[in-house]
Image (cartoon, rainbow, N blue to C red; front, side, top):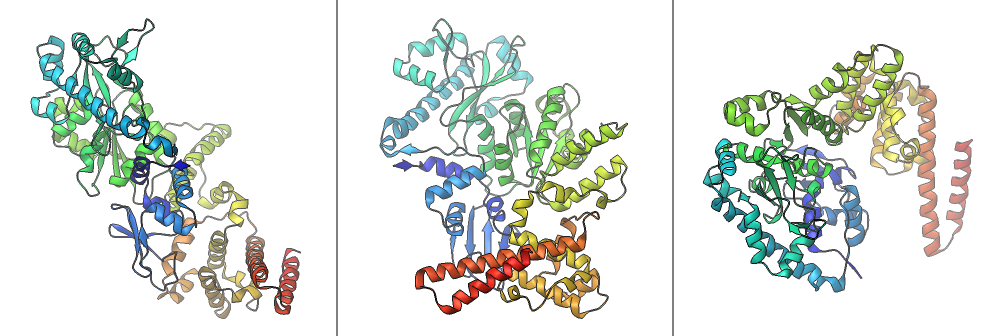
Amino acid sequence: MKYISNIFIKNLLYNSSIVEFISSKINLEKVGNKYRSFCPFHLEKNPSFVVDENNKFFYCFGCKCYGNVIDFLMRFSNLNFIESVKELSDFFGIKLVFLNKKNIRSNFFYNYKKLFDKLILDISIFYHNSLFLNKENIFLKKFLIDRKLDNNIIKKFFIGYFSYNDFKKFLLNCDKKKINFLLKIGVFKKDFNGNIYDKLQNRVIFPIYNIYNKIVAFGGRSIFLKYKNKYINSCSNLFFKKKNCLYGLNNIKNFNCKLKRIIVVEGYLDVVSLFKSGFFYVVGLLGSNISENQIRILYLYTENIVFCYDGDNSGLNSIKKTIKLISNYITENRKSYFIFLPKGEDPDSFINKEGKYKFKDKIKNAKSFFYVLFFFFINKNVLLNIDEKIYFVKKFVLLVNKIKSNIIRIFLYQKLLDRVGLNFIKSINFKLNNFNKKKFFLNIKSIIRYLIVLLVRNPGLSKLVNLSDYFFNINYLILFFFFKIVKICIYNVNIDYLKIIKFLEYDRYRMYIRYLCLSIIISDKINIKFFFYFLLNKLKIIFIDKEIKKIFLYSKNYGWNEKNKKKIWFLIKLKNFIKK
């Protein structure tokens, strides 16, 4: 029997955004710190379904249903618990790990975790104590003085140090079982000759905490120039994956509210130096590049991420990679900014030289995502001929199409068109060339949205809609709204967009129309009349198929009667007529 551990479920719920997932199923509107919508589990006139990102739960004031994101998926998609966890883990890119029931009681699960926590804490205490024993070491002493690391900050972050002599003492006082376990989880290693060594020795060591404030790994910062890598981490293990962790996140978690901003830096020392200077909302990557999981975690705690990479070539490369990754998460509410440090400086060295007020100025003057995007992709490209323009447009559009916000995409496309020498956004049809047509035309809501936009922009198309059509009687909320606009257009000659909006002055869908007209771009090259007629017929066929299925299911359970036979025959004839 397959089993999913409680630890995995806790991690999944923590690393998943309930708002991001539910908004992929239904439309959510932000109201204060929460999100609101019409409840998908019962019919209602006013929205009473509330989603709370901070507490990670949903609640409906109408039908009283509530729960976390797994409960929502089980109810919404009619899935069992394991199916819901699987779909959720696939959505957020988190690998699902199954355990056999036998393994739950074995050392692999409970005892392994207990032993891991105990040994990792023991060795971190040993590292921490070793730092105070080695304080007279010339290189270590100079390093601590230069970085202004006093005893208070060393104790706060539980910073340690490990010399070769300390390592030998540790091995003498440690039994074989413990050593083998430390080898297994990657804290210690063996060389080609079979000798055990610690790859963090002669480095200042920073314990890495998980979200539950437990040490799961270590990071080391070299104090000698001879080492190639300035920062290294202990190996990945069952409880530590580099791409899912952020150094200093355990300090941020203690705030219990959404922060105004979070600063993201590269190194452990950068986090410590900024924290020491009063910037408590700072986290460090465990490397020079950010991962999608880390971005997702950060947006759970704030809507503004400020990236502050080192002022060198690797820092610039990190900015480029971050721009590509974070474009998947940028919305009107979620924003990101970038601080550019002087060449050769990192946040640690900059704040120690210039002070915290200069760094505050850097935060205030941080460049937005859009500025950096234009800097790297538009301003730096010299477009001399058509081939270069085509290559540039293709590259830029691939990046911008990752952005979910239609409004942001429109402005970016306009900027792109200005750059390549086209005057109007209608000159290129980005939207229609980018979606999967099969998927689009099977989606009822998408078809109706396009029909509404086409009708509002071209009221004369209402003549193509027959008010006596069979599918006018179908009870579907957004379809009813479409027919309402059709009637307004038919009964009012020479009506235009502004007059339609005036007619809907007291209708809750008025703002929805404005949003659709802004977000959906339709090329002038498309035959509007043919496209509208095609979508209308496609919609009719979908509804007829739904009605046929409903009759078949009813007849399967209760038997066929003459009325249903005639209705099926009529619907099939109607469908064939529409197809012709």
